[in-house]
Length: 201
Image (cartoon, rainbow, N blue to C red; front, side):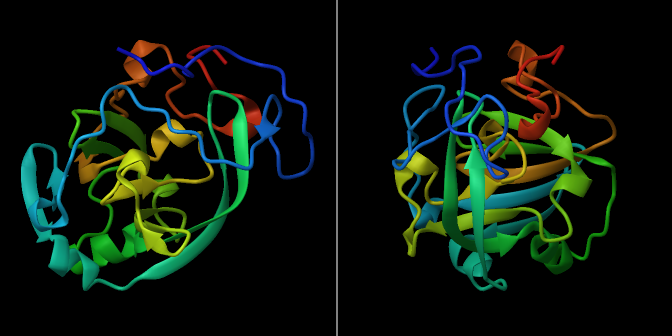
């Protein structure tokens, strides 16, 4: 069952050099999900890196929080047409996760996996170079469960369905394997500035 809000293109009203075509600004933070939010307690949370099916590194909550922490303020853009400016996050850059695992770039592509069974794909280049993090805090507080807490992926330059909630791992893949929404007609990449909402956009 899909939460209300995953709908087609809607005309945007607010336009600026920070708001992509077809988007409108919001002051709140809408909650969208494919189903009920899983309840994952921090002491039970695990994060796993895999190369194909093979696990190569696992962290628990305390070990993951001991990794270098980075603050990031970014605009975010949802495929359902809302954009929110200056969102403030804190977490662990994907670069620092890979460094702690002693990994470079085993493959060109990555699948993010989540506690609710959700997945989404992207090129590794979109996660590296300080472009993405596993976020642990939003607006100075622990990440709320409805927004993906205790941890979510944050890939702010792509549509927000790529910023997977309740993330529990990254898997390196040999090809660009489609995730949950990509298998259901969403664009395989999802660039807001090119309005890549659906497969043929």
